[in-house]
Length: 216
Image 1 (cartoon, rainbow, N blue to C red):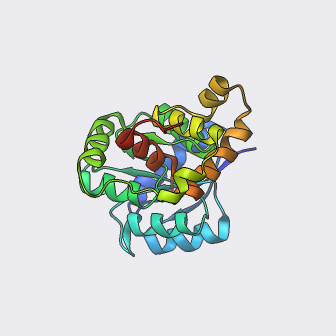
Image 2 (image 1 turned 120 degrees about the vertical axis):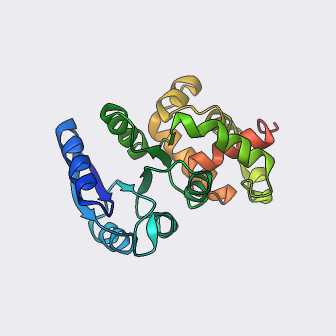
Image 3 (image 1 turned 90 degrees about the vertical axis):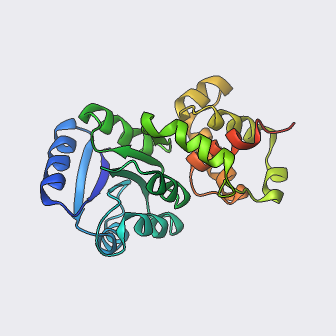
């Protein structure tokens, strides 16, 4: 089945370029285009895409606010794609629950790969921001704060999966390492996020980076 994508960007030329790239890639169906954050929310609620490709700086509340709403409502995965790799945007997007953060200079092939990964439940970060993200969340009071009771509620297998998330492994890689199916990995990840009060696997990975591997 094709991955359904909603493109949200206030520049018509950018939207047209993204749509052209995605439709040529195969396996991806662009189900709609939004010009601002508010429209992105309403269209996503109606169209139920697998992934929203979300710009940050848009009218109508912007991409960060729209991401927070869509993630809280569990409407879809959000992959932020922006021209700006400013730290404030990166951290705000991840705190809002975005599954990934990429820069618009990314190659078309890499963008398509990222969309497939996010649709499968994985997370992606632009290489140029990854180290800064880890350093920021490990060294400030804005670090990801897990539900303390949630850590104690994790099963041994969920702890194994959480450690793998901390290494940045994809669902496929986790399944291979732990000798389980990708569907089982997805189920474990969902349970982990719910128990820890987190919004995305990227936040889970940051948590492990901050606090180290989970205790047995």
